[in-house]
Length: 527
Image (cartoon, rainbow, N blue to C red; front, side):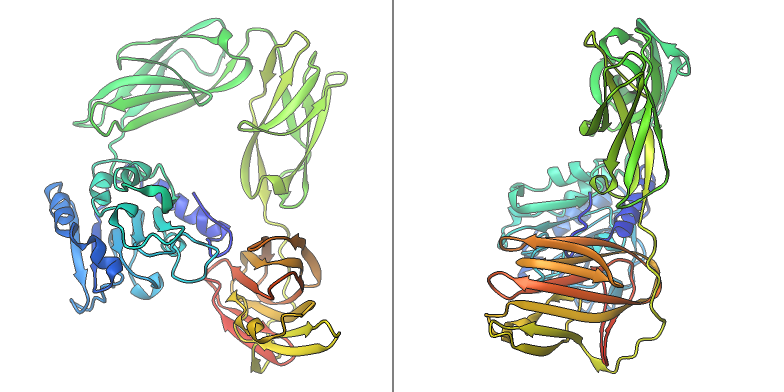
């Protein structure tokens, strides 16, 4: 769904494009699919199916257009000044979506046929994350050299499957013959062209505790012209049974543990697409009288702080905290009470659903109704000043070689990729120290990524943010930063092992970043 490492999207960007994709579900957007034609083999490989794709979309009442270089101000790389992009078929090695002045609609699929669009350890070529950054619901890219074999990339007919109501994942699945070198990123369930039914639970009352065998009566209102074949019952994510839309389920609650459960009634469309519409309901089962309670000592939690959970489970012998099926920790129950500490770094940012399962001496279990722990960015680091003192381009570096001699160096690339100036230094270098300042134009959550081989220590505003020994080729660290607007100090200490090579990126919101220290300055974009 998202890649937040080197050359990836920041957390705010990922949340933004996923929210946009969800908002487009069932919206039947009035957009256009643009197929880009140019003389590059990356575009020519798929041009043979452009006209068939356009014809198929027109037949279904959708717009599609082939854009060539020199046509009405078009460059054949990206659609220029188009505000209705629901699909883009691109064949280019490098591109900048922002410069196209076009807009991706919620639910849009945009991808490019090129060699390394999904290889994030290689700076060469624009990555698939460029489309996601500007609101695409999904994109794809090769993770290794695929050459210009059409079968390894989605055919343009991808957008016809999508227009028929398939989800984004289904559309890709039907469009790629040999997918083993292709990475697809985005919202797999995006369905802007799906026709949804209205599904409800007519009986029984879902606010009361359920026990023994329960009769579940679904109520389905079909979308016009889209009949429903059957209704499925899912319990806690597991398929249980299916009935005709006018029928009812008999659910034996003795088959599940006491406590809260999620039931889902799923109406399946009677068509080749089989669009699925559903209602999800929390219900409480009470057959054995078991009770589990969970509380959080503090909420919200700052990323990096511990989550302290406690609660009660009378007669239980042990409690386990889970995120889905992943166990985060456990505790013995004493006098009906328990407590568990969970590191927030093991969960990440956002509202994380957790629940507790209690284990009893007779072998039975019970679960609580769950809770959301709100994990937010750490406290925002204040800026040092609003004005940097620098005059010259670059980032200051000191390199010490095996003879204990220091070499001064100005790095002109800054935090935008592989630091190429290191190639000219002695391979016997035993330590490297960067010192500088960077300017954030917009406050928010950023990420600092470094790829290197050796011992690495990173400080921001004098505070140690990373201390890691990256053994092996291509090792990397990811440092989340919540930064205020203005200037911030940066110190990197690096003890290389093997080749002297380091790649650094500062990414986040769309904002210029300046590097400055002791009369040195460099301008760069985090994107």
